[in-house]
Every structure is written in structure tokens, then in C-alpha cells.
Amino acid sequence: MTVKLSKSEKKIEYDKKLCRLLDEYSQVLIAAADNVGSNQLQNIRKGLRGDSVVLMGKNTLIRRCIKIHAEKTGNKDYLNLLPLLVGNVGLIFTKGDLKEVREEVAKYKVGAPARVGLVAPIDVVVPPGNTGLDPSQTSFFQVLNIPTKINKGTVEIITPVELIKKGEKVGSSEAALLAKLGIRPFSYGLVIQSVYDNGSVFSPEVLDLTEDDLVEKFAAGVSVVTSLSLALSYPTIAAAPHMFINAYKNVLAVAIATEYTFAQAEKVKEYLKDPSKFAVTVPVEAAGAAAAPAAAAKEEEKKEEPAEESDEDMGFSLFD
Image (cartoon, rainbow, N blue to C red; front, top):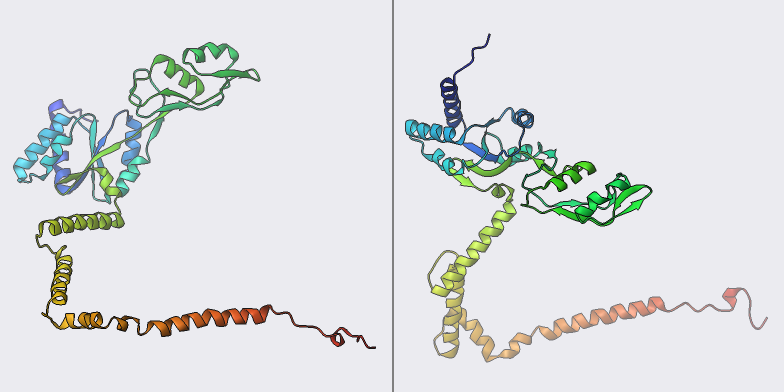
């Protein structure tokens, strides 16, 4: 025989469970649980069983537990969760890969009908085609300004119609029409809103970043730092190579314009005194390059010339 716990006893047990999870796990996914049923939530728990735990509860109770735990243990990192506990949310404690856990949670979305007064999370478009409804339902479509025609004794929608826009409340007529057409336009499940990892809180979109994305963003940041450093003449590791090259160019320009010289400038000065040295190897290479196409062209001509056949090769002579 099971003993029913009082409300105060339930709160004490909840505190113990949450404190144990806070001690055991360092990664938490904060998920919105709007319109998620108990059976659906149970399936999610089964799917995550092993390395993750889903915890639901009142936000005020969770906040109180986190504050008490932070005071007892001195671990202030979990206090970063407090601003995220807004609305109907739950906590998913995990030791697994955050991206894989999020993908697993997304698998358990369930289709739902459009109920009256519900705020549409997406645009709802009724596709064209045969509805299977008898012609007596035509007036119902006319109220919603949906163009129809009668085809083989049934109502057919001519063009696609945007019935409900995202953010609008579902009206009684729209809900009734979607129910008649058997359309369940919405799908609901746990939606990951934020990610907590060892004291850091970030958006779930960060989990989609690949190594190539990180390298690209890092390179863009280095480019910005380099540009600022060069513009301000402020030396940094990123700008140092460019500064050295620019300095070398300036010193080389001074050496060329004056009698001052150094080892690296001697070769440049030598070329400037005798510009013909730039073209020493050019005629030979050019001649070789020109000779190759010419030789190739001659070979092609030889191949294209048809062999002349003699009369004797044909088996007869003009003089026979």
C-alpha cells in the first residue's frame, strides 16, 4: 500500500531530486513545453533514458531550489539559469552530446488540430484540390473567401489559400474548416530555448556550428583586428607581418631614391640600372613556346593529309 505524500513532503522530495541533479550534471537544456501532453512527455523521457533526465515543475519552486543549492555548495554557476525560467519550461539534464540530445527531443513532435483561440505558430495554407465535401458546404467556403468549384459532385478548392497567418489567433470558422478537411496544421513538442554548459549559457543555434564555421568566423575576426591595427599603427600579432612588409617597402624605396644601400636592395638596384636583365630569358622561352605549337600544327597537317591511291592499287591501270 502506497502512502500519499503531503504537499510539503512532495516539495522536500522535489528539492532533494533537483539538488541531486545539480550535483550530478553540468549540462542542462532549457525547453519550452507549451501544448505538450503527458503521454508525449513520457515518450520523450523514454527516448532520453540513459544519459538524460527531464525535470518539470513550477518555476518558483525550481528557482528556490537553485538558490538554496548555490548557498549550500558555493557553486554560483547554476544561478545563470534563473533568468531563463520564464513561462512553461522544463529542464533536461544530460551527460551526452548536446546536439544529439536536442535532435532526439525534436523527434517527438506530435501533430495537433487548430483549436479556437490558439495562437498559430506557423502560417496555415489550405492546398488546392478535391475536398471530398458535398456541394451543400459551398457557402462555408464562401464565408472564408476560398474560391471553389463543383467537380464530380464534390467541392474542389481552385487555388491555395493562406487561411491563418503566424501569430494570429485561430477563429471558429478556420478551426471548423480545417477539422472538416482533416488537416492538423500544427505540431508540438519540447522546443530547446537555451543551453547551459558548465556555467555558460548560449543559444541552441550554436550547436549547429561546424569546425569550418568556427574557422571562418575566426578568420573574419583576425581580418578585422588586422585592419584596425594597420589603421591605428598599433602593433599586434595579426598585423605584424603586414607591418614588416610595409616597412621593408618603405626602406627599399628610400634606398632606391638615395645612395643608401643594403644587401636586399643591391639586386633591385642592379635590375634598375640594367632593365634588359629582366628580359634575358624571355626570348628563349618565347621561342620555345612558339616552336611547340608550330611543330604540333605540322604534325596535325601530316595526319590530316589523305594517302593518294594509285590506279594499280585499285586493281587496274589506265593503259591496260
